[in-house]
Amino acid sequence: MQDRYGHRISYLRVSITDRCNERCTYCMPQELQEWLPREEILTFEETLRLIRIAAELGVSTVRITGGEPLTRRDVMEFIRRIPEIPGIKSIGLSTNGTLLAREIGPGETIASALRAVGVESINISLDTLDRAVYSQITGRDFHEQVLSGIHAAIAEGFKQIKLNTVLMRERNEDQLIPLIEFAAPRDLILRFIEMMPVSTTEVLDDKNFMPIQEAKRMIESRYGRLIPETEFRTNGPATYYQIPERRQRVGFIGAMTNLHFCESCNKLRLTCDGKLRPCLGSYLEFDIMKPMRAGASDEELKEFFVDVVDRKPEQHDFRNHYKPGRKMVAIGG
Ligand code: SAM
Ligand code: SF4
Image (cartoon, rainbow, N blue to C red):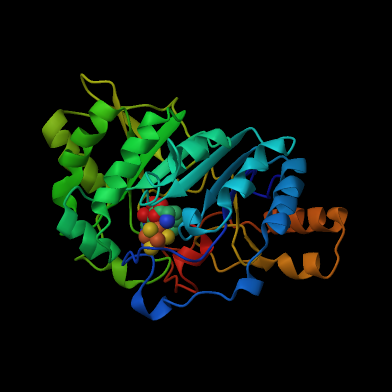
């Protein structure tokens, strides 16, 4: 699938729930804390069917997200079936990490189960190493669980583990260096993400918003000039750098300030309530659950996908007075 601007779609981000065990201020503001009713959520069978159809159209990478995907019941049974879909070459999961170390059987943790069902890459959110600040940001005192979760994931030898840090002036600007020092010996790729007005625009005021260039400058004043790694790409829009004199990679995701952010976008999103969303930062979304539940054939659903991709915008709308329509937690960041 290719859109009219030359974006080739090979990556499907699948949100399987709008529920979460945390309440991050930038993702789930107070006024949005209401869950969708169960019947409005795609069943796993329906989701697998849509992934299969996407794979037939050229999608080879799937990332499971949410809300917090590990809070959905039977998630392992669902993920286990994804590698059976022809064409899917890589499965990733985005998680807040709080449940990864949880034991689910003798010698078995959620992290080990994920590895066993075929997850190769795991992204874990960690905005700070300070427990009190972590609680303020996430609304929950789960910092220790997350650290245990990270270690549980490391022990399982995933192909790639990334830590995602959302930049917040005043809240975690003092954490950039500690997080780099935390990631280094553990061989984790750390990525700094600019806040986006997905759930609320309040996050963009000067007290909160911190551009990646500023983070980069702070890091360079400590370690020296970062070395661009133009050859290294994951599936996302991050730009990567090497810290001089050590083999450590850091990434920057500058959705708000990088004007080339959308150029290499290869993504399509499926929300947990069955909407195809061609761009995170655009209002456009198309209800594929409705025709599917009304009995559409695979061919008809394929046409639906192609049509949605055809409407993918050239770039996101975040810089144009974007007004959040629904919470990030429901879209699947
Ligand atoms: N619950 C999981 C987690 O926290 O990683 C997966 C879903 S979460 C929506 C995915 C990613 O989106 C997280 O790394 C989170 O920090 C990021 N995110 C959420 N709201 C954001 C916002 N307003 N701006 C930038 N990133 C955001
Ligand atoms: Fe939950 Fe992740 Fe959103 Fe935080 S960022 S509220 S952990 S879905």
